Length: 358
Image 1 (spheres, rainbow, N blue to C red):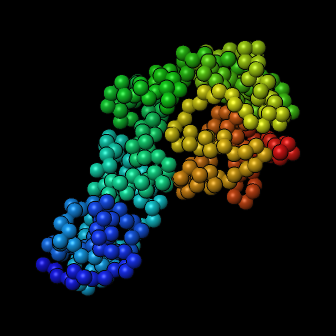
Image 2 (image 1 turned 90 degrees about the vertical axis):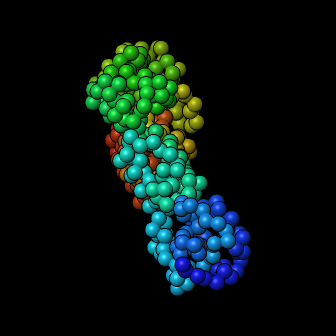
Image 3 (image 1 turned 120 degrees about the horizontal axis):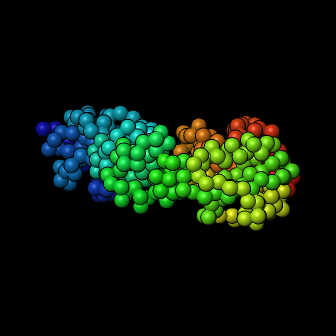
């Protein structure tokens, strides 16, 4: 059994009672000490998920080296002798595990044991880096898998179980939020949906506006009505689509005013379908002030995923609501325009027009 002086000193600004409180909370990622257990001869990080020892058995050290010199050995679970990995690396590892284990229930106790972190600390770190909880991230992954399976033509029943849903009731109670329609309608490419659209002219060319009874579901820019209609039908290949400018005239007029800078703060109802990640990106895009820009990396940081710049770019590229969800206001870090679904020239024209109005 290892022995050590119970009065070993660490940070003089913190008492042993304060350190013990941190250990009890299994917190202290930024703490500058380790704790050792006399009865086991092992030392750990303050947030180790190992069984909590009795206080009388615990002694504190400033560094792993101090603990080893006193005869204690490193815990295999939290590996306190190694450098602490960055929080982004920990979160990326948790994300990878969730993505690669679709059939596993995302329970904090399980994640805590696997990643040698307390549940409290893991949840707090994950939310700080991503803006959502591990469970919400798992839900986003399930929805993405479900949508891929439905698009591939699988039955709703097969797709929901492949995606990790345990029952149809659990899926259907989330369907309107995540899919914007029932799973069956999504599988059928919008079959059963009724979309009214209009085509009109603006200073930048032609505009197509599509709307359901819930709000605007598609908006595109271009120079060819044929191409714009193909875009709408490609987004909803099996929906019932009819042209009727008069039915959505007010929405079209509001969009034209917004395009021309006569209305710089639109409040149109939107009917959008997307994953949790896409919706987080789109929400941030809609918060970018008229006439200003943000970089892809800035957007990634704003949603708590600084390493996800490419994923942000993909979310911008798949945005079905040009202008209203202003992905044209996202540029590269060096200020160059970057890509745009409707063409770089249109993106530059939009930015120039907004800049002149501001």
